[in-house]
Image (cartoon, rainbow over all chains, first blue to last red):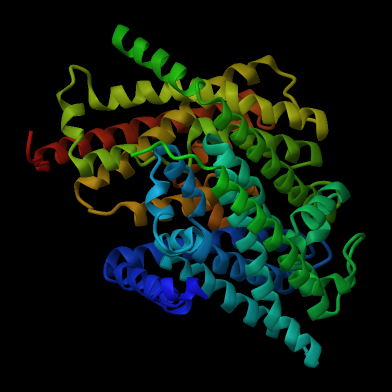
Length: 274
Length: 264
């Protein structure tokens, strides 16, 4: 109980203050902000063009047609964009570790993860989030989505579970910087690589790759298998339709690992004095 | 020229010291190679064994060469020069007894030399072992391919330099860089071969320098385009080098006249 009297500001209040200040500061440079958002939208668009060009030639990729692939892509982009908004710059931690500046954050009475997340909140990522959401909803409609209550629930839960999966992966990538420092690019294989896999029909991957990106990095559970469940499509080997419901449990397990890794990383950190 | 040679060597050595970063880059490039190859294989299998002139083996070669070229070409751009323009450090560069563009080009060559060996070769070896590679039969393909890679590095350098030099006029160039990255990703033929594009998009791509950065060196080096047909493509690369180099030096001259650095 002594702890709560030491802390004059409640956690929700702190969260609101920290994020609010970042949002106001970033939105105040209008032109640069608009250019940034447009650029981000363009990146999401060109990456989808890759799939579109292929589908224009072959009609069906990994057992899915263009609108079905668009559901997967939209859902994956929405989930990753949301996680990226909050945890996207966390691997910038390696610079703080290298230069010994992390002390400044450690001495403040606010959790380090919350500080990093709010400091680096990148509002420009509402671009990909908007595109992802629009694509997800439009493509679902075009592909004859006829939801019962369970499907409707899944349609709402899936983007949130996916965002939680990627949030945990990005946090782990950040925590790994305490050990890797110079090797921050290692983590990209799992975070950005996971995003690449998540936005692609999972049936295209060979069995070993599919197993890795399901059981180790649960990328196929973010968008591909929920789409199978939503549109009532049969799944390939290893990915039955019901695995579309595994996003939330996967996110819970990942966050547990991420939290442990993060704590171990912060404890391992030795400052350079200063 | 002696000074340039020393800069190239120093830049090579500088990058060869980041071993952990190199290993991390190789690992990530390789994982992405597997993901991209899977998508291409599925597309080619769906098309019945060949798509737009690519068999599965040629597609694998295309993917692995693309992953290998990514780091040395630095197609995703750099930010160093634009930041130096912002901070005024560019004044120091302009005072050096060596041309501004040639200084940065020499650094780029040294860096690219290391990146070809350190980050280019390993993913190719993995690719050769796992998926196999379609290697050219004509030895002239290797020779012309090497020239094409050098020209690709140069085209990308000049385009990137123009983007950076825009900092003389635009306060924040990040928006520009993001747009450049998106366009380059697609039109260079990095994500998918440009011959798979519908005609209108292919027309747009061919009118830009982007295919000269990735698609042309891949086609030339893999021998998918035989040497006699690759020669005009390499000629196009050369034209883009000259055009972009003139553009960059014009921008530099105009920017220099505008530049005002305070303090000393």
